[in-house]
Every structure is written in structure tokens, then in C-alpha cells.
Length: 289
Image (cartoon, rainbow, N blue to C red; front, side, top):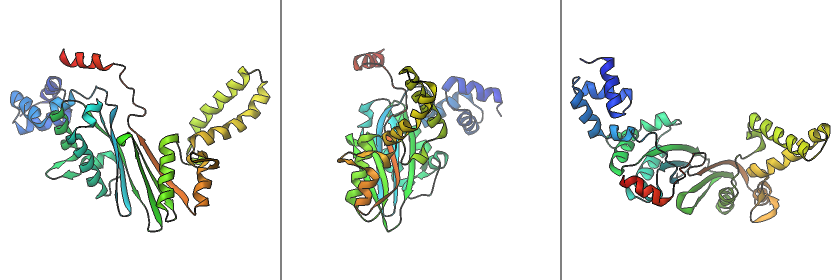
């Protein structure tokens, strides 16, 4: 009916993935022109051509239902699209769908059904409709027990979202901890979570700094321990100085109020994504060309 070369040819014509091209040819009995139309109708061709573009704007959101919560991030190319009602509806719909599931991976999440289509197809159709790259980047499902409380905080309209879980029934403290995490950007909750390769890299930097300050190598080695402890206080939530009372660590603040911090998830939209270095005027001109 059709060959591997036909699949390859269709992929080159449309920019769609191999599997989608195979499905298109199967649906169209190997007719190349019909398969191109099939992919266009599904929005797959248009969506695939945008894959190489950068999507570093967007929104994060937290949805809570009883003892379950989900935090997710969806990216767009521009902040204009992040304000689009269709875009916001997508985030809300996907979040609620995941919240009512037990998925743990992105692959599983994309196969969840939203009405009559998968989240994956819902995303493809949204890209085709809006006309720029949209990326469902990440999510995390979080559970608590009846003796625990969620701390939920969203900053800058969803540019930063923090979800925490605390032992102790004090929502105010939990929200304070989440607000602190939003402001102070801890990379980890505890020092035990810091990867060994990150620590080794930091040790090397500290050692080089000490040597550059004129310290002998053996003294530089001894300085590493003290400065690593300072590093922990900068990047670990529990050890950071609490933003509302710097005389206390975040962990001490929680304990003073009968709480223990058990989990933190912090999503900052676009973090780690290389962003475009274009001004708005250039962006508009590029759209006109």
C-alpha cells in the first residue's frame, strides 16, 4: 500500500513525525496528497513545523482537590498567547484531567482523554488554532494525608507557582513557606537533595576562589567546608533565612508554629529555557515578513 520511502517523503513535506505520517498514509490508503491534507486537517503538520521554535513564556498553575494537588507548566512563544482564554482553558482542563488520574510520566499524561481526544491531540489542535508553538513542559501530582496541609502560592499571575506539603494543620504557615520559596528561589528542599556532581562543581569553584584570593592550597581546602555550608543556606529551602524574619531559618519558622515541611515543588515559567534575544519591534517585523 505504501513504503518506508513514502513515510520519509511525507515527513519531509510536512515536518510531521514518522508515526503521524504512517497513520496519515494508512488513513488515506497510501495517497500522498490526501495524507498531506489529512495531516493539515489534524493540525499535525502545522504544529510539527513549530517544534524548533522557542517557547519560554506561558503559565504555571496549581489545582487542589481534597488530599490531591497538581502543579503544571505550559509554555508559549509570547506572553500575549499566555493571556489567551483558549490557552488558559487548556491549562485548566489538562490540570483537572491529570488530577483525576494516577499518571506519573509525561508520556502517560499525554495519552489521557479529554472528551473524545487525547491531551496530545488537544495540544496539537491548540497549536494549529493559535498559530505558535505551545509546549506542555512538566507537571507533578502531589498527595497529602488528613494531618497535613497544602501551601499554595502563585506569583505574577502564574509566572511562579509553589506547592508545599506541611505536617501540622496550619494553612497560614504553609502559605508563608510557599511565598518564601517563590521569592527566594530555593533549588532544593534539603541539603540531602543536592546532587553530588553539583556539590563537586561548587567545591571546585570555592577552592579556585580561595586560591585566587592568595590562600595556600591546604588552607583553601579547609575553607571549602565552611563555604559549602553557606551554599546550602542559599539554595536549600529549610536552611534559608526566612524572608519575614531573617533571624529564623524557614525550618525553624515552621517548627515554631508546630509544623514540619515535607515537600516543595516550585515551577518558574521558562526557567532553564534559552530565551530569544529579540525586542518587540523585531518580533512584529518578523511576523510581517
